[in-house]
Picture 1 (cartoon, helix red, strand yellow):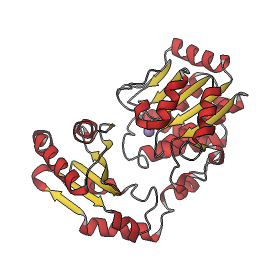
Picture 2 (cartoon, rainbow, N blue to C red):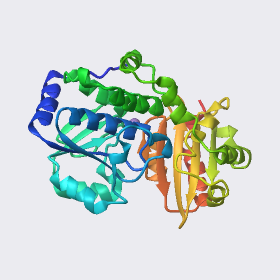
Picture 3 (cartoon, rainbow, N blue to C red):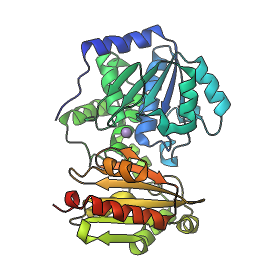
Length: 343
Ligand SMILES: [Mn+2]
């Protein structure tokens, strides 16, 4: 496995960028996950400890299970306060783009950022960055953007600035993006980083409790219904899909983050190497998340059939169509990729 090591020249560039500028906007992708929020909060806290002014701006809010993180309260939501957000973008010297690789992915907010013509600083672990960034730390072998932020902090000589709050935010990013160190976490350095974060005084059990054990009773019932009634298995393709209808969402008081973890469950069935979770939205919009095992490229599939993208084993997309139509597209895709699914 190729390990990321920042080049000396890159480190110098990053240090200069921080030294020479004063105001930093930190942005991340829509429907921010633990890595998006954790890496943003960690970077923001670090920059503030260096006397810089920062503001984290997210396209929309994150799930409740991340709101205990220190600093969450000062995050600006673009969908709630677009005017205030865009004022800060115009005021900022540099705009960080964390955990996403394309301004198109953040829609309206991306257009506003583009218009400012401010230098962009991309830190991300998704493949194929297509963002026109002045500074870029893009490394797909990293388990999370939080890992990259940690490495930047250490390589730039700011390790002593890692407080318990920064460590908590970074740890949250690492464990959420690896599903609790299940996926994408074979690199021994990840554990060296975790050891350092533990030494910074984080309470690992508390964090796991906040993130993994805070769901509602209805969420577990919804999972039961989806697994029992909304699960379609295709043994001939080693694949499966599940779906959540608008009615399911209403029946079980669906909250942001409730489908987290659900999408992975089909992969626990022997021989299933690829699965999808479709979520129905009003006005015939269907969103879909993909998970795969081994070398099957969920991101390529997502791009080809669902206007999406992502990582090799975890991707997503959306189509302006009904659930039924989306299922048909998925099955068509399975047929096209049959050779890769059935080895
Ligand atoms: Mn990530």
